[in-house]
Image 1: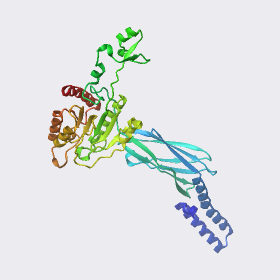
Image 2: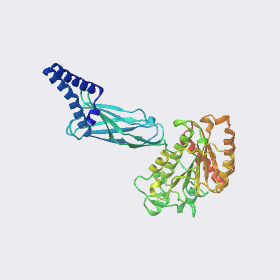
Image 3: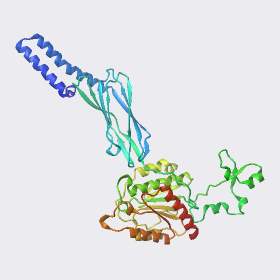
Image 4: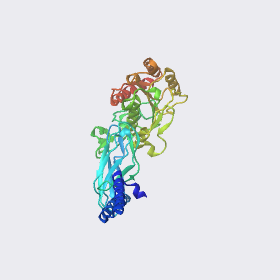
Amino acid sequence: MSMMSGLTTRGRCLLAAGFAAALCSVVLNERDLLRVSAFVIALPLLAAGLAASSRVGLSATRFLRPPRVPAGQSTEVVLELKATGRVPAGGLLLEDTVPYLLGGRPRFVVERLRWRGAVRLGYRVHPAMRGIHQLGPLRARVTDPFGLAEFERELAGQSKVVVVPRYVQLLGLPGGSGVGSGDDGSILLRSGQGEDDAVVRQYRQGDDLRRVHWKSTARRDELMVRVEERPWRGGTTVLLDRRTAAHRGHGPGASLEWAVSFSASVSLHLHHCGQQVRLITEDGAVLTGDTSEAAHSDAAVLDALAALQPSHRSEVSWSVDPGAGQELLAVLGALTPANAAQLVVARPRRTRSLAVLLEINRWGEPPDGADSGTDQEESARILRDGGWSVVTARPRDRMADVWTDICRVGSVTQRRVG
């Protein structure tokens, strides 16, 4: 019965015609017509049997190169199809299930696949938005050369595509970044008897010659270089405001996506500079930054931000320090003056506090005709009066330039507060 269910309309019509011819041959006593009818009946049944055998002996594997891709770039999907049965597969129509956000469903036609033969097929997906997407299942439709029978089968299961947010390379650090206090890290390194007590080590292949410490080199009669690493005491907390009500725009150009990309860029940059980074949301939920080493890797940060969903909370309240005593960089959307005042009260005065305040009206019109531009300016003033270093960001601003401004104003404000 399952083999009969695989007959196409053409096959069913041919089978019906064969039975009709057989009936006529009996009524008319025509043996030649009976022979023709037997052939006509056997042909679709034989085609269905071959197609069913071919369907059983098929397997497929899906590969992603690479499985993790930044939004806006493309990844290659490779399908490897193998025939494991003894009956060679006839015409194959393959269709892989692809989410709408990644593009249309690719289709392939394989005219013939020999026994133990294999064929590789490929296509590319171009994700425009971050997120975790599923490819598959891969569906195959096996047909015979005459189009009399066809069977469908799922060959490959689902594969996960992790679309991470865009991130850019940043340069520089605010003075004293990562030391967990208001003192400049460069000053801490030079404290003591002065230049002669600089921390030095032997020269290693690849060290920058500009870091050579000539006094120590002359005294020890071997090439010595300065150790420029700053001591770590406390790390840095990056706070990402993900509230839907605090952002404007839709799709890749939304203010939330800008904030996510900037947070990713800062987190990776600080991690590459040897600092431990704690990434949290506006409600205090920790995305990355626990005690395990894996929590501080680039992959952990990017995967957490890829899966990040916006929050539908309209208001936010900070009753305790969101930075937990660490230095804090807050990437904020629409912020009311009351919330800004809460941040100022929650943060210790001498602990470095940085903020990137998005001019969200540049990303789109505020709902219900509300004017949030004045609130943003007042919130920025409250933060600055509370000792915060504040930089505003617009849609066309380069993230590297915004980070440079943060480094500049952070160093100046910290010296003034200290």
